[in-house]
Image (cartoon, rainbow, N blue to C red; front, top):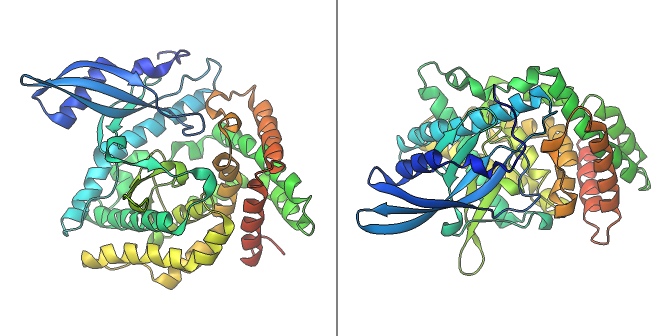
Length: 426
């Protein structure tokens, strides 16, 4: 087994990988002339991998042309990083490569059979899945005008509508795809969809420690707010069982089982705009944690990570209807039975709201962070996890006192909704 690299991993964008990408994209007639790696992201945009641009010059016949791609490559993990973390990162790359290069095609095939347009994913072209050298080459959406929405502003209704419609379409496509599989089981067809880390106790400990600092900071913030002492107590009572709670929520009734995006928050959706600045198209990116669970997990994760409270609360029922109309509409167009009603979706969403709350506790500080606040999660080791946890707590406490005043209101609105729903005792 090769050792974990410790240098700049841009070298993992190899000539062989670029040639394979060019062939998959342009065909056999395209020959590589040259390429260069050109970063375009900043700290806080990505966490589980490095995302960079690849500028390519190629020749078709006598004509020399240019194109560009996006490369996702593995972080250079520390030499004393846990073996389990390296395994988990490898599995993440295998899953994402499989999703882009195999499953996306099957999902679109299921839609096309019924005259329904493709899902909005970037195209996947090639990958290297050798451990410590993982890389995936994807379509560069920037030339088509796609860009990230300012995560600190909080999603608004027009942007949210596009995401929820596409989310419903993705979930419905997965129902159609699975029904068309010979074994009727996407997890048996693609075992990588089953998260191996769920069985790894060392990963449980790692994520528990990662959450503890932020949850303690949230408790400290809330206990300073009059009449929210019960929320602070609930956070502290819950943090010991956070991983168990997550794992329980991953179990799903077959009625609600769909292939979810798994990480649908502001950083993982890109938008294209018209001349008036109105969002007209969305792309779902980062398919690293797709899994077969309840659609309510995707909905809760998105709605409690990427919104200011008033927008979410004032539009929640319309958001759920937007999602359900898309989901049920795709299945109706395919003359396929809809597995649950709108009312059942609302009830399922409510049952899984704690997932939204726990996800929000982790993601909201990241969403609102400045680049210098962004956590360096890939350099955590067994020896540094306690320090990391304390640093995250300190960052959150400082954020709560900033003049922009963004963190505290998002927490207050989220916890108010959890008390109204009975997740937290009022």
